[in-house]
Length: 125
Image (cartoon, rainbow, N blue to C red):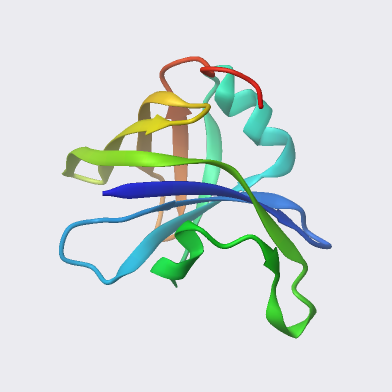
């Protein structure tokens, strides 16, 4: 399975974490505020909002979005696997170009999660 983190450049600039998951033809997606991404990479716990699932084409897409919704560029991408998905907790193992480690998501309510990254950046590109 694969993942991508896209920087969404728009009026509400943020990052989208998207992951493939077994049995789905779409990508599970969480929105992370722009300022929180730096905190997340450093190992801090931040909030992430669950968004509608995205088409798998977004795994490799960079460019303008339709309807004036800004543009996206890939911050990181690579392989991922689901380590745990139970009782409102999800753990993904990421092996990307920049990030390698575990992402821990804990559900707060219907749409909101806390998210924590358990490793350091591989390298800056």
